[in-house]
Length: 215
Length: 218
Image (cartoon, rainbow over all chains, first blue to last red; front, side, top):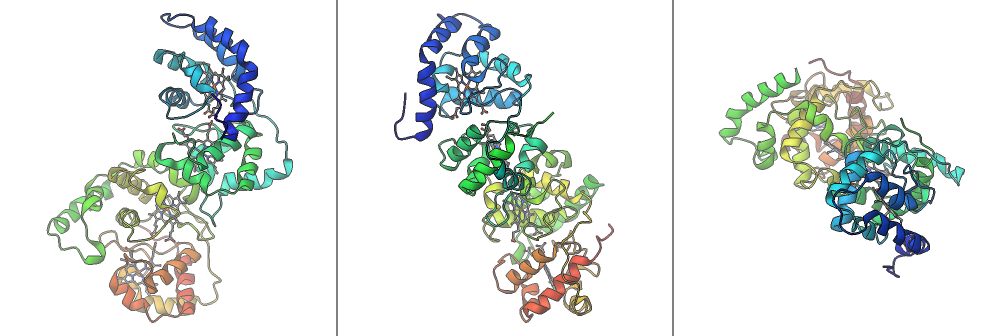
């Protein structure tokens, strides 16, 4: 399950291992033997909550907050995890237990929760992060994030909410996009964008985003 | 009014297109032809324009630094030609290419975007030049540029001549230099001939003049 060559999966994998026994029980209880329709509430409470918290506001920085994400975006991500278009050693075994018809109610549930913003660890980085978010970088052709992700990073349509998301998670996703390890972005928009960003810009924009609260 | 203009345009252009009498700097074929024949839908265009906003801004006013041009109010025909030329590599734009390549946009979406942008109001916030040589700029402009770009910098939709009034100074200057030095390979050769003899300081005076021309009435 762990790919030792990838820092990301090592880190995420550790979290997963720690949760291992509890999760195995939860997965067993929630999914059991193939049953017809799964009760969304049971699944969210016993499976997803272990990592994403009950209301989707994960408290573990490497696990994304999934509260308040766009419904269509959640559907797309779960399907992408299922088909392997988005690779994650942590989410893969989780979605392996889901049936296609579980996706819609899960997405509906989490999209209706409210995402709670956090606080930046490195407040000095916020200034540069704000600049990147609103203006991008004209020299290197980084487009402003606000153009697609909307004011306060609220997202809409195919552009997910990123305002209020964990710094560590955002940083990791941007690095994954830049290395094409995450490649499920339509039209390659995020791979192109993140490849043009410096480490400093990636870190700064993630520190800015975590504090954004969107309606 | 937007839809009306587009319709008029398609009707007007149709004979021109079918007789295939198009000049070599503007051979209307392939996806350019498809986009021009498509009745652009401004509502769909607004959505298709979203990935462009990170550079060109939500109101398509571009950047006053001139790094990214204003697109609002530009003729739909000009926008279509420029996008198609950039996709085909006739005009080099590595920063933008990954966002407008054919993996990202269909010719129909190009038509929608062009129709949407043409109908947008022109922002008052335009990056101006130093304003020191406007008289010299005007003189050169009136002599060599009005025949195509119009006395008020309004350009021409039918002839694919861009509106140059109220465009950002730095952008105009950079493009003029590209055109003069052959780096913008899709340019009308008549214009290249005219502009060849211009010095950098002439081009600066010209860009200075064009940038401060008020948005032309339609």
